[in-house]
Length: 158
Image (cartoon, rainbow, N blue to C red; front, side, top):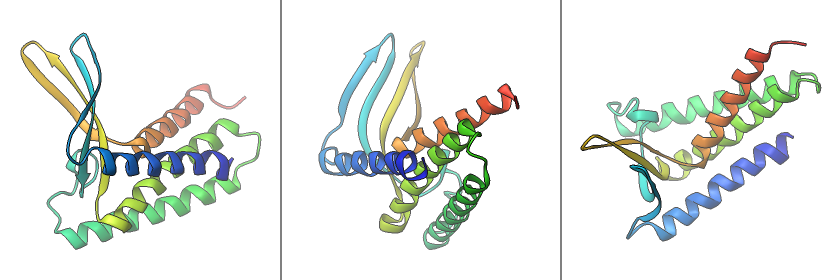
């Protein structure tokens, strides 16, 4: 599961970022517009964290901070995964899904100093268009993985 699922998310993330970097540099691509919700592919480079967290930290310090956090988190997730009994399938699945996403963003930070984002979602409320922060497949993996862990918490132990 560690290599299959975690590796699958990592490969999907890196492949879609490669596509985005190659195809979206000059233009965006509209995917969906439904009842005021718009989904577009647009290339963005995020040197900060989610919602521009720590954007005020100078460049190299911010890069080192996020690389260090990602490495420590990846090591801890791997240790946690390896120590879990095989019966804890949902927790193990959640951990490797988060790990695959974390590694995808880590590769970007090491290679480029920023994370490649390319999925833009916006919606109209009244006359105003509101934007969700642009994200990528690694961010989806992290969110899905955390959702699986929360689901296990709600379900509780059998």
